[in-house]
Length: 77
Image (tube, rainbow, N blue to C red; front, side, top):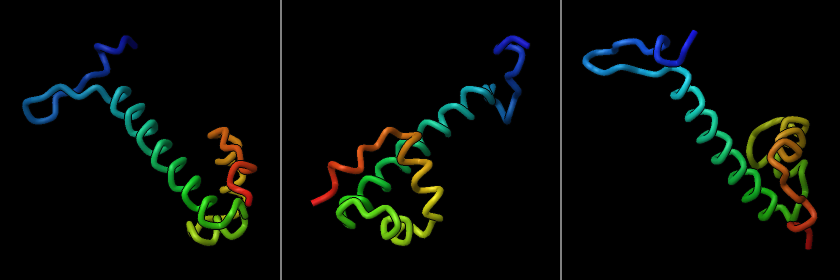
């Protein structure tokens, strides 16, 4: 289905669901990356403590560190 065909009318505006979904993902990833980097800075690169600070599972933290290409060594003191 072409992108133009996926637009639906909501109120008086056409909404492109795919573009909205992509924009949401990009924004969430940028925020998550920044928060993980901040937590790693506070914890001197300790991923387990950073996960606790963020309130997320340590494996999730490690997965996102790899996914976002964060270099943990730059936070270690």
